Every structure is written in structure tokens, then in C-alpha cells.
Image 1: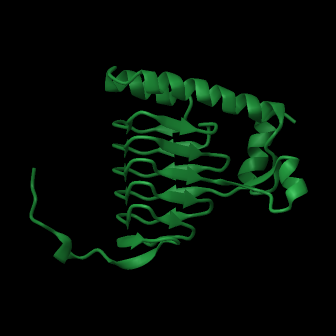
Image 2: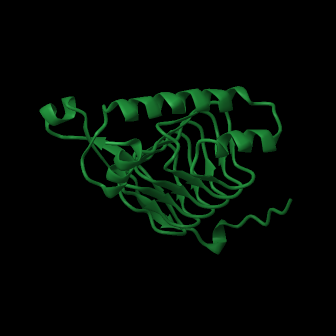
Length: 196
């Protein structure tokens, strides 16, 4: 099976073999490309974005990862405009990862679209399945947040530090915890009057 066929199988949500030579090689390629991006710290924004565009599916202008950024493949990641990720971001993109505009990640945020088989023999044989992660516009994800497969986070939501997000989070709310749950809506009372 070609890499393209394997990618289609991964995106279908069905079980796939995570240990094929093609996927092992694709992960090794991603390590090399993220290494190059991480070493580019200090180069111009345009140069750094060009490196990202060399291995991610889509990258908006103003995208920035502090060192270090890691992804599993890169080819299933789409990032909007003015994205910022603080230190040590990890994206395992067996499934699609879609991130909107004006999204902020705190340090050590992890997005995990893939899951291993539950049966131990299937798991040992490389059995995995993936589900997409979608993050809307103007979302703020706090430090050390882990977002699991199949999750959608709505526009303007805030995810509190240390949360483990296992289910969808609606737009315009603050959510936190393990597992993450909605704490309250964001309202006009949250405005401080700040203007740059």
C-alpha cells in the first residue's frame, strides 16, 4: 500500500497499521523537518513560515512556534492566520488537525488525533485509528493542555491550564479540568477596557 493510500485509510477513521515502513519513514522525515524549523529560530518570519509550508498542509501568515515544535507527519495539519504556540508543542496528526485564526497555545500543549488499539495483540501489531481535532478561531489553550482525538473546540473558547480535553467544548466558554468541562460562559463582565 502506498503512502497516499495509507493516508486515506488514516483519515477514514478505520484501523491502520502504524508500523508500516512508509509511515515509519514519514515520521522520520517529520523529525528532520521540525528539527530544521526549530533551528531556524532567529531567522525572519517569512523564512520560518516557508519552512513550515514545506511540511504542513496549510499555514497562515504570522504562524509562530517557540522551540521546540514536534509533529508526527505534518501533512494533516492546517493552521490559520496569526497562530502562536509557546514552548514544546506536540501535534500527532494521524488524523486531521485544523486550527483557526488568532489561536494561542500555552507551553507544552499536545494534540493527539491517533489512538492505539485496545486489544494488546492488535496494539503490538501496530493497530491504530485516528479522529480529527478542530480548534476554532480566537481560542486560547493554556499550558500543559492535552487535546484528545475527535475533539472540536468552538470559537473564542478558553481551555484552562493542565486540562485533558476528551469531548467537544462549545464556543465562548471557559473550560478546564481532568476531564475538561465547561465552567462558565465568557461575558461582557470579563472585559477590562484594555486597548493597545
